[in-house]
Length: 300
Image 1 (spheres, rainbow, N blue to C red):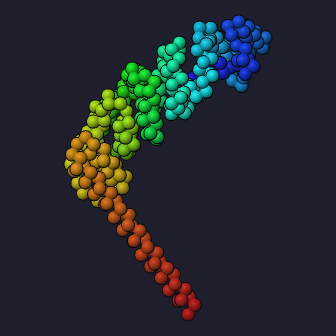
Image 2 (cartoon, rainbow, N blue to C red):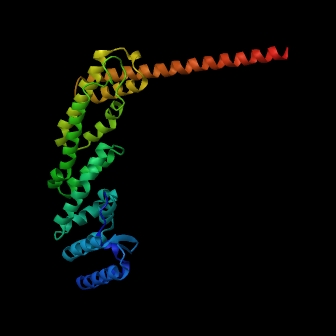
Image 3 (cartoon, rainbow, N blue to C red):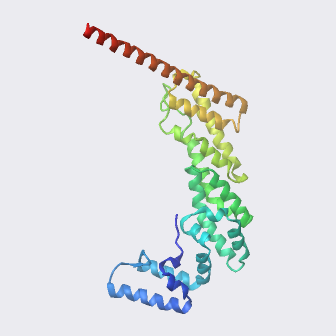
């Protein structure tokens, strides 16, 4: 979610001389342009914007001009609030500047919270770069540890809802009650990276880590082996799912046993791949021999 600094509609020359008086003049000029052109939108500094957007921007600037100027001049803070660029989160000097500005500290912290809330939820629900969650957590504690609850509250609610959905929807990994074919969605829900993203959240998320680990253990692993314990009866995707479920479950239940299951499944998969390669090679050799014999027969 991007939220542009309202100053983005002004040119550099306009920004250099911007104050409350020039702001009133610019507002009149821009609103006059709407009247003269009768267009629903206009282009300002390369951005297309409608009249309602303009009114909101000037209302914001009327009350918080100096705050937005401070943010705009702090390049990394502005880039983070505008586009989610995380360079700010790794810059100790930029972080210290924010902490030292008492006049705007509370307002900036609230903007940071509003920016981080959807970012955290997306990073956990669609895990790609897990290390970003570690960076965010360190940043929040650096800025103000009292912000932790606000920053992570929406992510907690979203994740709790998701895990409750898994428990209610998938009490077994199977698509039916009479064979070992897995539900087509179960693979994406058994996700080691997703679990690792939970690990990289504050300790308040520990109950959710346990809930997810137990779902993998009870609803996926146990239910599967309760129906069929022989690996040969499962296709490769199902085996990958069971392997990952065992890895995740090992963090919360029967660590030694579940890790052994994961290793055994991996060895089974590897053995089948090696056997398949060997079989393919034999058939290739036989095919070549067959072609050679046919050629000899044609030439004789």
